[in-house]
Image: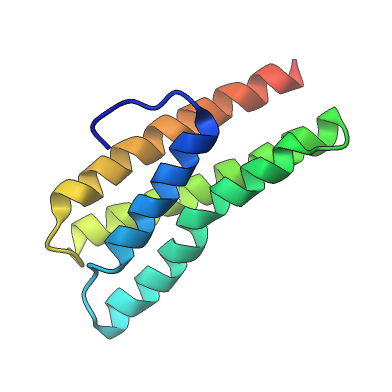
Length: 118
């Protein structure tokens, strides 16, 4: 994740791939497995939902699907914060990179939704 990717679809693909890689490193405990499942779902959801947004049937449909992406990114951000707080991973460097990328993606989606609404 060192090189900036400006193609949003590619960036979401890399984000989802890094989430999957992180999941494999989480503690194999009851809490670790619970958080892993939740993060796996939310952290990989923005990619296909963005694809849905690209095929939206109307402006309202586009905005709705972009908001779904935003919701999943915000949820992932919070799971990553929890992983760091506990911690549930020894790879906090990767967790911190994903927290930063989540924040940046959230900002992109907020701005995109605002633009689409105006």
